[in-house]
Length: 166
Image 1: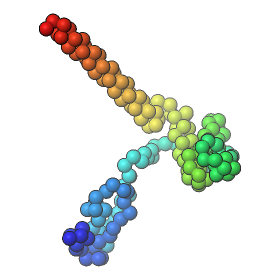
Image 2: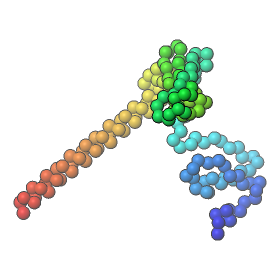
Image 3: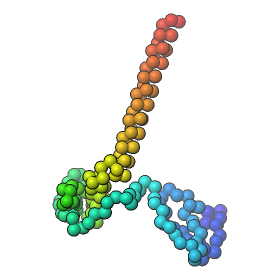
């Protein structure tokens, strides 16, 4: 029996949504009535900082330069690398993460917005707080790994000493 045969709903109430990969079939199926409003839900792994400072397009200077790095002629001859400068703060962002100019422009604006927010808000910026939390977690993991290694060395020494005794 196919999975489609398990779900029989009236067509007016059934809608299959565009869902990220990895979701199960029953998570993709949603029941909607005509009165129900769909609220946008943030996808996992996507960060949204509504409290960041907004960028004014008049304060930005944008340039398109030739790409760099691996990719050969397709990368090195096309001007799809975006250089974005925030004039009041002097912060410059260079983005060449994709081959698309539009995607690079969006990514550059997002990165610049985060950097400008850190520049003006300092330690109160959500981006700065998140980076501090990540660094703290990394230190804790490093500390635990070091402690585990020391315990293993101690156990090995005890094992060697107990072998010599017998």
